[in-house]
Image (cartoon, rainbow, N blue to C red; front, top):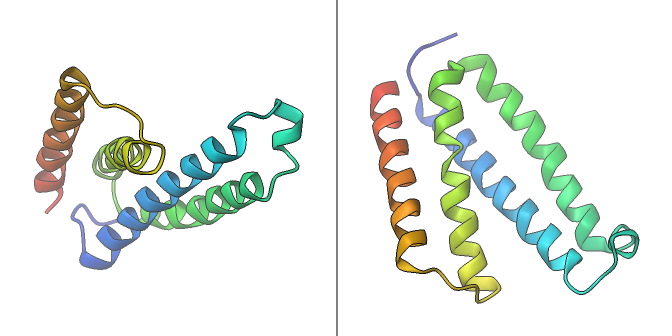
Length: 117
């Protein structure tokens, strides 16, 4: 296991972030205005599950190469991406406190990322 991020591993982590965000968007869309059991019959639910499975494989490859103390905090970018996706796709509101929290998460990820380089 290396202790630094390589460009391919960083790309794989970013792929995991995007896959996790896509999964959450699929689940949110599938769950909108539906009882829980009806949600299980929707294609978007199954697409979300597929994103989860693909992310699981990619994340396992990441963890084989990078220390958990570096890789896991970088996955916090999924919080940022999911907030942005919620605002853009679902027109959810982001107030100043929420935006400040997202900024602080991003700053923390930048610090961890710089540590791993």
